[in-house]
Amino acid sequence: MKITWLGQAGLLFETDGKKILIDPYLSDNVKNFEPQNYRRVPVDERFLSIKPDVIVVTHNHLDHLDKETLKYYLTEDAEALVLAPNGGWQELRKFGGKSNYVLFNTGTEWSCGNVRFTAVKAEHSDPCAIGVIVSAEGRDYYVTGDTLYNEAVFASLPKKDFYAVFLPVNGKGNNMNMTDAARFAARTGAKYAVPFHSGMFDNLDPSDFAAENRVIPKIWQEIVFQ
Image (cartoon, rainbow, N blue to C red; front, side):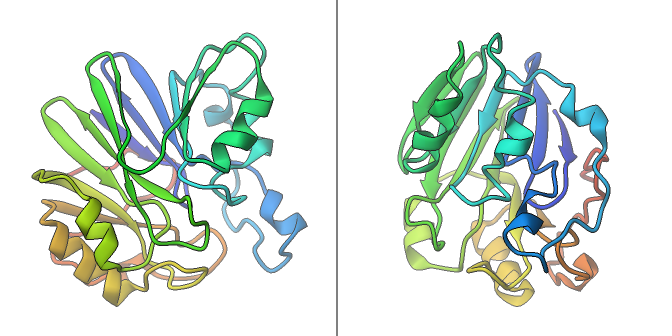
């Protein structure tokens, strides 16, 4: 398994011969609507030329469902599997083409070769927001999406021994702050905790994330667990 952080909440999983994108934001589109939220890290255009087999979008916010990024992947001849909850799904299917747009609400599972995706609840300002568990190579990776610390989120989680949890720490826009994110990570029991959703629109230092088992990612680089 190779996992690369694409900035904000974007991740690229490579496993089973597949490229899996989660919430890619490789534009400066948010700035057009919220000028204070401009991109502070240049785009690495290498990642715009990949051909993803699977795209997961956790909710219908611009820095997660970014049409300016997705237009590079959801071309007329693309045949990607696209998983998204209601709201996001309604928007994504407008791309059309040969891709398979699957409604991926909380509780839904979808298998793709040897990889299984499970949608779980997220508590966010988009009421349809989800997190996703990626199960592959005998391990379970939990990407929370944008969320707050909420009992209903934990109630939606299947009983799994998570290898890693990826979670927001920016403390704005209805996301956890670093203190609550550390509590959240500990409660999942994950072996590793990876903070994200920082450094794109702000100057937060992810090393302030106090989880003992933290792994601080570097944008455009593979995340190394050790």
